[in-house]
Every structure is written in C-alpha cells, then in structure tokens.
Image 1 (spheres, helix red, strand yellow):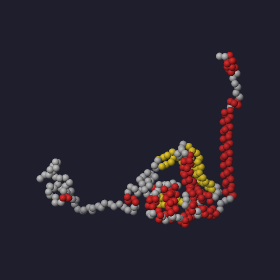
Image 2 (cartoon, rainbow, N blue to C red):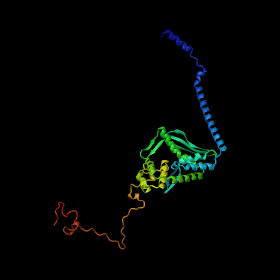
Image 3 (cartoon, one colour):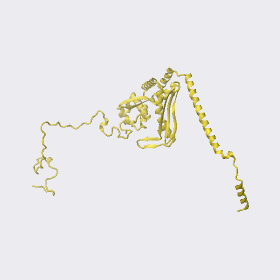
Image 4 (cartoon, helix red, strand yellow):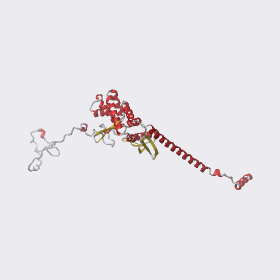
Length: 346
C-alpha cells in the first residue's frame, strides 16, 4: 500500500469527522415541522368551517323566509312542464300504485324554500367501498336530517353478476346514484309535509293540462323504456291498446313509471309482462298461456258423478275373441292371432 494512503487512513482513524448537533437531529426536526404544518392546516380549515356556519345562521335570522312567497315560488316552478314531467314517480306495493315526489322535485322545493343547505359528501374510500353522507339542514329553524351509508364499489347485474368497479368515473356515478335517494329523504324530512303535497298537486295539474299524446310524445315514451329493455309490444299490452291510440292520462302514468324505474324505486318486471324479475325468475306470462288473460281460468276436466249404492266389483278382463268373430274391421286387434311365425290358427 502506498505511503500516502497509509497516512490518510491513520489520520481518518485518529481524527474522525465531526457532525454538528444540528445535522444529527435534522430528520426529527423535519418531522416536527411537518406535523406542525398539518396541525395548523387542520385548525385553519376547522375555523373556516365554523365561521361559515355562524355566518349562515346569522344571515338566516336576519333575513327569515316568507313562507307564502316561498310557496308561490314553489308552485310557479311546478307549473313548468319540463319540471312536472320529471317531478313524480310511481311504484306498486301490495297491488296498489303509490306515487310521490322524485329527487328533482325535492331539489326544486329546497331551492325555492330558502335558507336550506343540502348535498352529498363522500367521507372516505376504504376496502372497496365508500362512506357517504347525505344531509339537509334548515339553517333558520336549525332542523337537520343526516344519513350516513356505505356504497360498495360493485355493480349488480342479473346477466353478469357482481362486477367490481375500478374506474373513478364509474365509482362517482354509483355513489351519486345511491346518494340521491337518501338526499331526497333528507330534504323531504325538513320541508313541511303540506308544502310537498301542494307541489305534487300542482305538478299533477300541470301534467293534466299539458299532456301530449302525439307522435313526438309516443316516440319519447318508447325511447325512455327501450333503455330498460321494455319493448313496444309490452307497452301496448299494458295500456291495452296500440301506442298510437294512447290517451293523455296513460302518457302521464307511463312517465311516472319510467321515472320510478330510472330512480331505482321499481323494476320493469313490476309493470310489464315478459320481463324476468330481479330475483332471476321466469319471465311473467311466458310459462302459462292463461297468464295473458288473468280473468280466464283454465278449464278443469269434468268429473263423473259418483254412483250411490253398492260398490261394483271389478269386472274381469274379457278374453281375446277368436279370429273370425269380428263383424267390423275397425274392431280387429292390432296383432293377428297366431303363433310367433305369423301363421293363423284355424
């Protein structure tokens, strides 16, 4: 080993490099700085949220709603045909059709009622599911409805089964679809019931006054149900007439059914025959020809009246008649009387 290398190694062993205390504790200092920054950010966000809530309550108390003016605004909104067509849904339960306000009507009522905050929040995503919160808060009366629920990232299908979702857009649409039902329930929980009933009646009146059963309306109905697998023949079978002879009242009813199917309140099998149910059963009306006519009962075989008295003893089977004793050729036995070789006995 060269002499210079030996001297350098001896110097390094006798005088090791000196590290300052600042360099030794630098990682710990960086961790503390990061934690302090995160804590300050959380505290700032919390203070901002509290200030927003306090400001909203102060404004609501300073400018309270005029319920008569709010009701007038709601009724005016329900007078629009475009809103009325999307405002109501219907579904069957226990043989009775039940109708109610859709999420679109609930949102319109909340917007016109005033001093109301509502929405959907995704709290977290973990282990293939989302924790979601739907809320509606009447700031003026401090009435609040909150629903927290889990949404698995799975799409359910009768044909393909359960399909896990990984695309962020598919997950977003699934969460929004599931959250809209809870949001509707939250909004209707803070709005007075009589206000909602007035809005529903106004929507019914708007639909009755402006119901169109022309070719354009018929085309829209067919397109709306085609996306759910319902054919023109199935629609005609439900309304008991051709689609070009549909009445305005039937147009209104079909629109409510379409909204109910779209919002997940019912399935096509609940309204139309020939569509497999959600449980995977047989299509309605395909297994039995009498299903097409509910009032028709299949005929039962006629029963012979029982004879009274003594029971008749079973008669012995008659012996095979000898050949040549049949006057009618139709009464001849299927096989000739003879031996196995086909010779007829005398």
